[in-house]
Length: 575
Image (cartoon, rainbow, N blue to C red; front, side, top):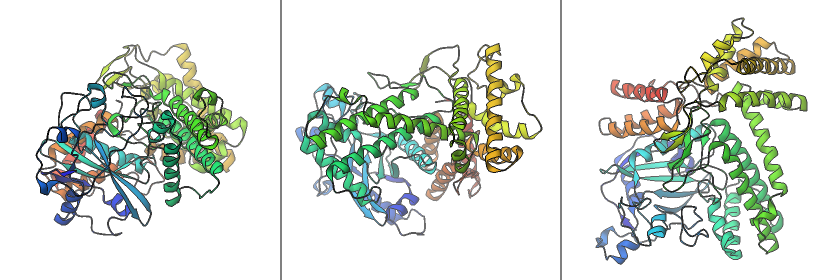
């Protein structure tokens, strides 16, 4: 490992640093020269890779770091070898762990140079020089705007209670590349396990599973279980629950996270990692597919079965550990964990649709107690999904990083607008008014034509919505108007008009990169923080409903924040 010179600290996550224990609680949140130097000295690194060694690249002695760092091996779909012998971190290193007052954290760096585990080496059978742009996955660098976008989106997701790795720091370089320093209490992916499973390496698999469980116990995430069979059974149970809930949450929140059989693009706790192909849609663009050079991704609705397949693989894995014999994966297609997955997935989707309407957690529990009420919730979910899945007649077309077939309705808008309309003494609204609220900019007049079938669905939507409101009122001993007022206040935030999308975060990140040298470091961080706080859409959060620009000191910073918000509004319906 060598020092990479010329870096500047673009961003530092003070909240995360305090949580990890890197800075004292309540410390002054200013990037001082000492803090900047400490981050650069620790993380401004470049891998001395096989190209450097075989080509005898001259590196000044003072730049060579005294200790080795590790690029981890794991299974990866992009590689010709499907057993993980040559695949893993293509441009990242694991720096090590930090033990703080709230547990042990993994620290990794992305953009630190290309490794031999990159798909480029496996495909072209040669080593690559860091910075080479002639092959996919061959550079080892990370674009600065991508790093800033990942820092923004991961912080937004975390603040909205979506499991994710988090960005601790972004180090920028003059060529518009960066190194992002990432942190999480356990950054192991299913792919780290599946490498040993595919190879039938029992001892290797046992070591990584035992290490993972020990980390979870150390961090007080899981209880200590000494019996091996019970310990591995508990692992499977927890992974089943985590992936069922995550798949339902991603689908309900319109989060595209490319899950595949290799378990490369997701953490073992079903948290999001590696934001290169992660997106949050404005509409339910269920036909969107990411173009990864030689293959297209899964769609958002296919994520569920991919998550279920990962659980099936963990059932195979735990059986292998307990029995010592590796059975065929097909033997686990009816495993009890898959039935549990389905139950938790459906329950989580029911809770999510009630949450999106505006019901709080207590009311959700009341509305899901009886079979009859659950049937009513399921009926509403079905009719909502009809409007979510309606597509433009334009058909499939290319977008910046893949393909899409545009959705035409924004159900967030109708969920937000219905309570105030009903509180103004309108028991129902007309089909035309309903469609006018619901339609997106992607919809043509032909797309929103009010057929007899669609009129019936609009009437049914409102009828079931009202039945849920009145049932909640009965269960809570309130009037329907009181319930409407409560869910209206919550829905206004949950279904906020200016909700960030993947496209928006790309342009916001680019704007921050363009402007960062024209404003002070303090103003940049304040702008970053206020933008994130403006995207906290959970009424339960103390930071919710923040107004961007309220604390900005300079006129320029306020102008930039409002320009970023305009970008969010412009791309609110996109991918």
